Image 1 (cartoon, one colour):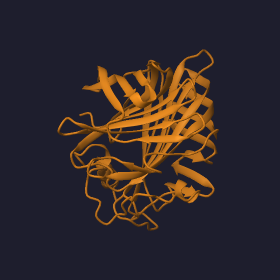
Image 2 (cartoon, rainbow, N blue to C red; image 1 turned 180 degrees about the vertical axis):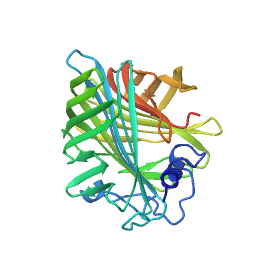
Image 3 (cartoon, rainbow, N blue to C red; image 1 turned 120 degrees about the horizontal axis):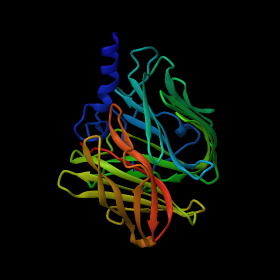
Image 4 (cartoon, rainbow, N blue to C red; image 1 turned 30 degrees about the horizontal axis):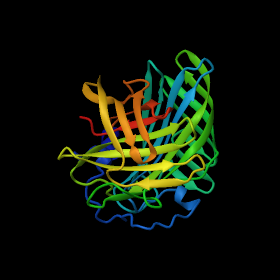
Length: 344
């Protein structure tokens, strides 16, 4: 297989759909589909689920350097399947993609890796936990080490979980549309972080917090959904919130949220309880992208402005999207991360 053919085989499952991000609204025939009342089993469910079409291990972090400068970090491993099975060798239908990024107030560094399953280049083992693509690694789960590098940046950080796993939606069954599309979705939003960023001007020691999202499905979007705006917010009082809106072709949105108490107690909120409305847009990579939002969850007294630390945090990858750290002001202060997909 020549290089061009290999790249085409790797990229098509991620980029071939007009539905939005990673073809998530396309047909799931032949793959397993999430069902209500999931029964998770750990550590096994920290590992891969090759009978589902799409899966990710997704870490974002808010950090500060010694002088108080804010930084953001992203480490993501995506798995996409052409068939619900695994095989040894180059004809394995499991495909892998990695994204790594560091965001500063004036720069956004991003890089990507692509791999084919079956040859050891990328994968995940559950016990002991390890996730990797080439030399990027996450080793360990409750106490983890995270590494990645690109042409002009690198990071090596340690993560320590200080709270429980949080199951999004109803016990980890996260509904994504009025038609009932769903995923299995849980998070570890209680990581404490310390380590080192390597930037063009040198090494920067950092401390902060990190949030891991684990999600897998085969068709989590409806065929009328074009992308999403996803927020993970950590408030100064120790509470946290995950919320998203899925944009539809009829200009309506489907929303979902989870309120997370400081002790990890989670309360899910179904469509309509959470709202996110753009307040300001920025021209990013030739398109208008919302980079300041009003986010509300009235049941918890949340009415905050969420603003990008660096509005130009564009992920110029095979499947392009916006991802970066944010500040939170208003009824509650805090920080977090924002991801926006499907902006053409």
